[in-house]
Image (tube, rainbow, N blue to C red; front, side, top):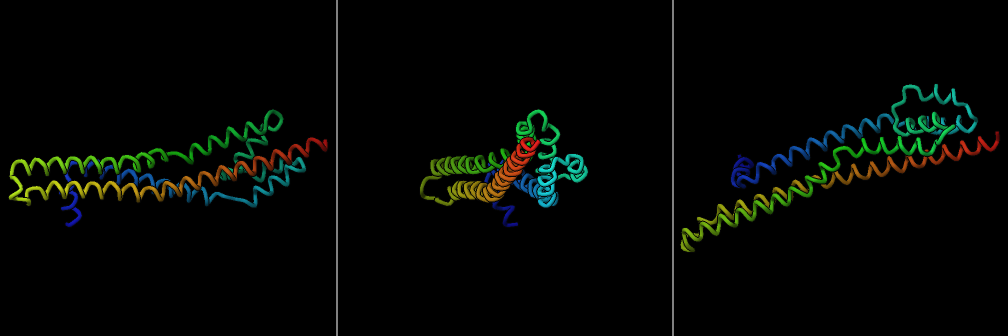
Length: 204
C-alpha cells in the first residue's frame, strides 16, 4: 500500500517512469536468457579441434565435427573455411559483425532508459516545484501544509528516476562487457585460423 501511495503522490510523471522500469526489466531478463543460451552453446574444445584439423587440411573432418554446433565462434570459423579459396578473413569479419549485431540487440533501449529516467525525474521535480509555488501564491506562507504535496511530488519523481537509471546501469555494463569479450574471442580464433591456413598454403 505504501508503494501505491508513493506512486500516486509522485504525480503524472510516475506513469512514464513506470513504463521505463517495465521496459528496462523486460530487456534485462531477455538479454540474461540470451547470454545464458550463448554460454550453454560454447564449445572451446571443438574450436581447438577445428584449428588442428585445419592445420592438416582435413576440411571434411571439420565439416563433420561442426555439424549441429550452435557456438557463434565455430559458426564464424566454418564460414571462413567455406570461403577459404576466396577471402577467408573478410568472410569471417562479415559473420562476426552479424553475430555481434545480434548480441548488441536492445542495448540502445537500455541506454535510453538510463538517460531518460533521470530526465523524467527532473521533469517531475520541476512540475512539483511549480505546484508548490502555485499553492504558496494561493494560500500564502501562513499555511505551509499546502506546499507539501508539490514538494513530495518533486522528491518522489527524482528518486524514482534515479533508482531506475542506477539499477539499469549494472546489467547494461555487464552485457556490454560480454559483447566485448565475445568480439575478442572471435577475433582471436579468426586470426588463429588465418595463420593456420597460411601455413598450410605455404606447405603446399
